[in-house]
Amino acid sequence: MKDKDTRLRWFRYTAEDAKAAQAELDELADQGWELAELGIFTATFRRSEQPRRCWVEPARWKSIRRKDEQARTDYLELCSDAGWDLLDEEAGLFYFQAQPGTQPVPIQTDGSMEWEEILKKSLWNQAYTFFYLVIYWVAWTAGRYFWDQPRIWELFFSNGAMTAQLLLLIWVVLELFLGLRVVRYRRKCRKAAESGAPIPVPSRRSARFRGAAPLCYVVLALGVGLSLLMSFSDSHTSVEGTVRVTAGCSVLGQTAEYRRFSQEEGDLCIESYDCNTGWLADIVCHDLRATEGDAGRLERYLHRHNPVELTQAELDYDQAWAYRWNDGSGLIFRQGNRVVHIESEVLDLTDRNTVSALLTDLDGAACTLLESVIA
Image: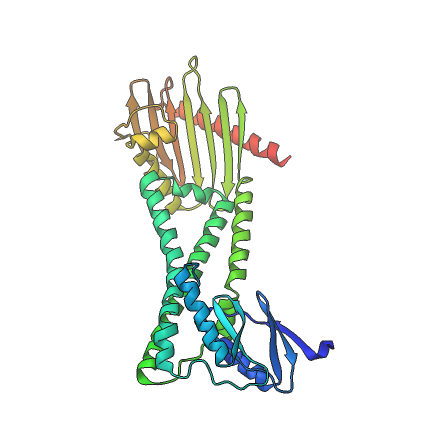
């Protein structure tokens, strides 16, 4: 067959857009094009003097239960007896095509019956699929937050992590939008069936966008994967003996951490968060203070002491809180948009000169680490 006698075009519709698919097939048939083959996202049409008409409806009986398989077989035989052969099943839709030399009547001629027998359940199942993913994601995120109480704000110090979270949020919003659209269309179909009007036909542009949703998911998934890989380059760690230095940065701030575990010199932990925004500094400062009263979080973040009670200290910082335990002391302070957390077993953290010297050494070590990575 000559190339001019065939036509390949974008053609992918989902279950809620069966009427839009039907309308496009009817339009092409009026122009002399007959559906030849369905692909994942495209369809091939061939030129024909008398194109065989198609009928599209949401697929049913998709489970492997014997009862559903038998109902599906019986229904397809009934359609075949009426002059309709199942050409293909794609994206949750049955594509029937009229048998050669026949002009059968549409499979469904009563809008009320089509609503009750097909659309009512299929549209509900389609909406449930979208909302299930959203509900699962929200429940999992909320459960993890309340159970583990992670430092959510640490994401703001990694460009890759922030990008990944943004893409996941876009994914969830897209799922929610598509689900709400199905609910809205289902309501329209119900009202049309009750009033005896024809089932409404979705706009082709919107239907094609929904049909392309899987491609959007692929792009989002690739973006999340690349963002997570990028997040590994946002933070760098150097280990020398019992000393570990970590440094990282993002568009919202810079972080530096120094940890030393030594029985001779005593354990020392310094965390510095230099934020570019005041609201981020507020969140960091509040969470660091809350951690000191939570035994589970202290253990998770390697703070080797029991929960303590913080007392506000007057140390010439904007805000400062000090605490002690049997083997050492700790200090949390905020100066401008910089938040610092220090714990030591031997040093006097109320001495401003001592703290300044520690921060100078930490900034120097973090700068050296980042320069060595760039080099």
